[in-house]
Image 1 (cartoon, helix red, strand yellow):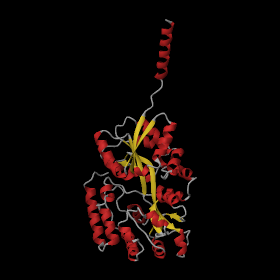
Image 2 (cartoon, one colour):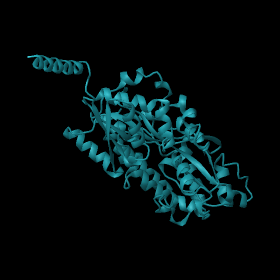
Image 3 (cartoon, one colour):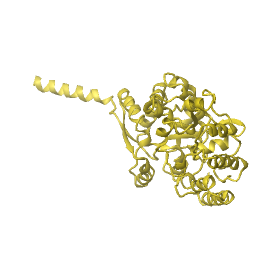
Image 4 (cartoon, rainbow, N blue to C red):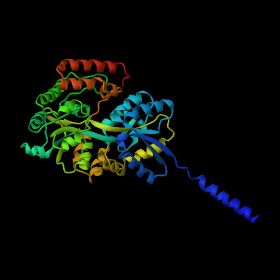
Amino acid sequence: MRNLIAKLALATAVLGSGLGTAAADTANIWVRADGSNFMPRIVDAYNKAHKDQIKLDIIPNAEIIPKYGAAAAGGTAPDALSLDLIYTPSFAAAGQLEDITDWAKSLPYFASLSPAHVKTGTYKDHIYGLPFSADASVLIWNKKLFKQAGLDPEKGPTNWADIAADAEKVNALGGNIFTFTPLIWASGGDILSTDGSNATLDSPQLRGAIDLYRSMVKKDLVPAGAQTDTGANFFAAFAAGNIGISPSGAFAIGALNTQYPNVDYGVTFLPGKDGGWSSFAGGDNFVVTKGTKKLAVVKEFLDFAYSLEGQTILAKYGSLPVRGDIAKDALKDLDPRYQIAAEAMAKGKTPYSVVFNDLINSANGPWTQMINEVFFGDDVDGAIANAQETMQSIIDQAPQK
């Protein structure tokens, strides 16, 4: 009898001890392969410090957008996603993302988050995405080549005339949406209206930037393979001294430091025609799948990512900080050239459109076709007019902000 009473008491004690302890919960998050260096590290740090856990899946870059779209439509999407910021308006418009407006605006550091990310994360005045990872377009130059050309190796170009003159004395320049549009923005122009409802290609600023590139193409200052090069050969070419000046992303700092540590290079802002500067703010927004039951875990993880520890992990492994108020602290132990890139990102821009992929990213889209034609073809006016008409037609057929 005593043994039975003891067993019952033990069972009651064990049962009672669990009544006040909630079981750990797990949320599933996806990230594109571009984040495969920093994302596993920040997830690991979070999981070690928290009861609730994150299960991470890394999806190939080319697959993540169609895969997430299909999963969201079929009810099998992850709880959250680190999503290329340019796609946030499209998924928000499709009704596949959770409205996180109240949560976002309650964050004490909300005003310090990357403005470009927050803008692309907003649809019809509601917030569906918050900044997670970041990159910025900058201008880099080979100091050794500058010195050999009789230029000041410590001074990068500060306007378009400098770019043309320095390139002529050294060589090389290339460009696309990430590095070409800042030249236009810094000169007071744009390619889309603020709300994305109108294409604004035919402007003096865009034509001026085109003229800059065309003049360098005619002078053979642009590498012969630039028209077809995807950028895969850039770092080797830059390290070998075949490229003197080039627009690039902040990721180039880590890549050059790791792969070619002996290359002496500078980093500066992408300038406007007569001075000033701008940058394309790239990276990912953190979005939550509509209807997830793991919202509490997702919020806890993002809070950790926004802490100084989280921002430092992201900075150390390939992403610029997205909290401007602690960016300097997160970067303080890294290459000081990252500070320039972080400043560029904080003041950078990202075109807003629910059809960004159709307008800009698609290899057969109007932007890509126009760039190839105006840089290397003969009919600049026709290329601009055709791109303007095609882009506006795509916009007019899409849901608007």
